[in-house]
Image (cartoon, rainbow, N blue to C red):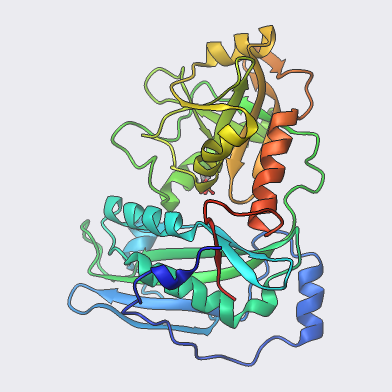
Length: 367
Ligand SMILES: Cc1ncc(COP(=O)(O)O)c(C=O)c1O
């Protein structure tokens, strides 16, 4: 395992100020079936920023509501960024993160794009680590995880349109049940002909709340067509595959390639990157290139494309077995999850939960 020892110490130590924890019996009951995003641990990490003082008032405190002036910039102009990563219980009872340095780097990238203050990577890692250490009792047994949600919002009370002079960074921890329950059969994606998620020069490669608010309408259309999620196409030609609502999309070809759309207007997913990096272990050649919807349709029909899956932190890897579009629908392969998809998923999950060797040093022990 790699460790945090290689990282520079943070100027923001995120010292713990513990509160009375939830009683064991109550926490155990909550961890038995946490679902996703509704149950929260006892504490949160926080830090404030102002143009005059920089980052200050960092710490890990009891979870509490946030007080915001009604004129806070985030409420009007959506100046907000976030991240999503997980803490995994290991076989020996310790707890590890998975490539959190990539989340720290992406958070900084998002901050620059949204004109928010950049949190140094070592401070991002210190905050996440301090919270998981204090709330380690909230890390469930596999296959459940503790989902971590770092975010920064512009808090300055000012109605003018400019980068806010005050912001607040927080990290929440939320136990998350296994995402796989009931999804083993694979998902169906709606290829939306009209609504796009991101345009060249826009914020598609940043993890900002506005992207997700703008994607909800397409998700609604997908549901109305009895699909699990939407597959966004590019905003210019409505022809090139981009990504799904909260996951990147990858295709396995009969020629032994693992193909995925290039970065630019899509999110640089940690799972996407990791799958591309382990593709060779599975006899697949990783290829980042544009994929048209015609290639997907024809390839799924004639067998040139054998498997398709979505990749993201929440569900790790989700087999995509069917696509629906205004003109009809088509299945991928025989309409069931493919062997490469399942093998890649098992490899990643085993790595995350410490059940497989970690030659690349992706696991970061924190407890
Ligand atoms: C739009 C979008 N694409 C892709 C991903 C997958 O990224 P990651 O693998 O880092 O979770 C996410 C989830 O964070 C997302 O919201």
